[in-house]
Length: 164
Length: 175
Image 1 (cartoon, rainbow over the protein chains, first blue to last red):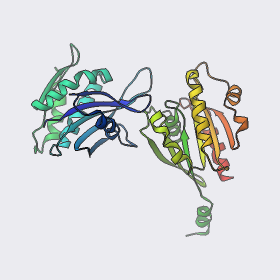
Image 2 (image 1 turned 30 degrees about the vertical axis):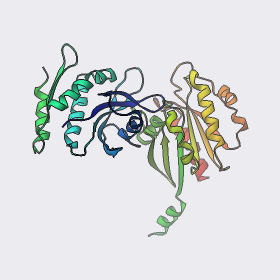
Image 3 (image 1 turned 90 degrees about the vertical axis):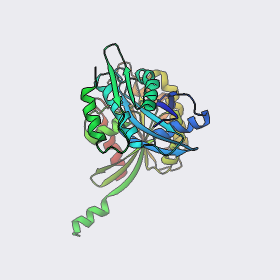
Image 4 (image 1 turned 120 degrees about the horizontal axis):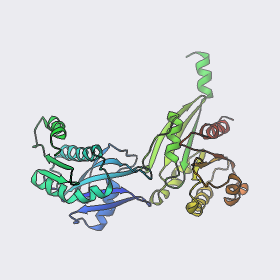
């Protein structure tokens, strides 16, 4: 399951904006449309979105980024593919798991997500990832194999076991 | 259906209202306070939230509009079908008063319905260094408005002024 690119989108002062894409391979015209398709109208934290446009397919997870000083922000993690033949459920599970793990460790912040995006992308290509977020916090994840009925249980178990 | 039910049904009115204002003024937080009676942390609105409030003799469809610049172009499409507008202002953010005034004037000038009711909320009254109500009325030229309007001081954190302001609004609809 090799995405074309992973993106992080959040709400800026004017509207939705791209924070980072890795690798940066999506044409700017498509990117301008993409940011508004990753968080559809009326979306709330916890929602998923999937759509197809300009021969690109994407699945996004919409979540809340906490802030101590200002109000919480709205953001999305996005996987972009140039084929429709990918497992959207696995994408949803990975993204929601990563966000939940960062939140659990009080590390859910835009700059953290920016930093781990390249490693997450490489992890998608290898089928697993291990990311050191700080000197004391690491997340490690093995992607469920497609067609495995026990995906959900496997992920639940991993969240308990894989913190170093 | 009993006589009373029929009577009640015929007396229930419907109103569409929109909540506008700059981003981070507190529009969604006010709406959540109306629904739950308590302060609820919110995230920026993605385009529009639509909620229905069921009040005695009045069903209100509320369109809570995102305040970011990119979304303001769609306001007039929703506002022109509205029976009333709630305009929310962060009264503690002096740096954005000019922007708020410009957006307020654009919103008001786009209205065609002379019977429109406008509720203006000076929100974040719990913050220090807020603009005075009288100064605000003068600065925003409210006395020249050709609509029925009222200004209330509110705080969506403490709830101060929220219910009183909407009571005025609802009373205007029910007549």
